[in-house]
Length: 172
Image (tube, rainbow, N blue to C red; front, side):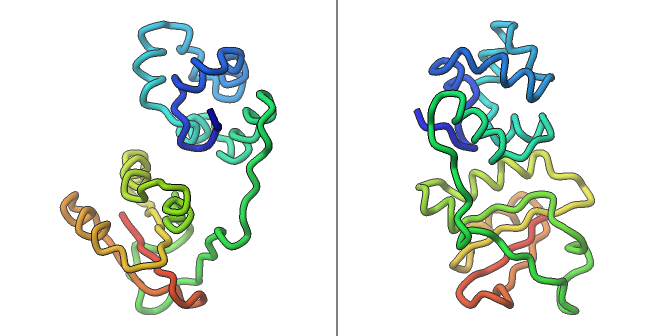
C-alpha cells in the first residue's frame, strides 16, 4: 500500500498497525481510534488529508512522516504541479478576496487517476462560510460547475491570467 493524502485511515492501520501511536501523537483527537466502534466508522471515512487537517499539519508533511516510518520514499512536490494564485483582478467577485481555504490541483489529481469532483466535495464539507475553495484545471470544468450549481454553491471561473491553458474555478 502506498501512503498518500487519499489513503483511508482504516486501510493504513490494517496494513501498518504500528502507525496508530504516531497518528495519535500528530492528531490527538484520533486517540478515539482505540475504541473499536469509532475505529471502524471514523477509520473508513477519514483520509490522511483529513487527519492532517484535524492535526493542523501540512498534508505532505504528514504523509512523508508516515512514509518514512514504513520505509517508503518521500513524496516530493512537482514544481509544475504547484498552483500560483494570481492577484485579484477588478472583474473578480468580492467573495474571492484573500487566500483560498483549500486549493485543489485538478491537473495533478487527474494524472494520478483521481476524480477532482470527489476531492472538492470532500473539502466543501469543511469549508468555512466566509472562505472559498480554488480548483485548478487544464480544461473548462463544465461538469464541476454544473455539480456545484446543483449544490447551490457560488462559483466563479476564469482562465489563469499567467498560465495559458489553465483555468481557475473559485467555489463558495
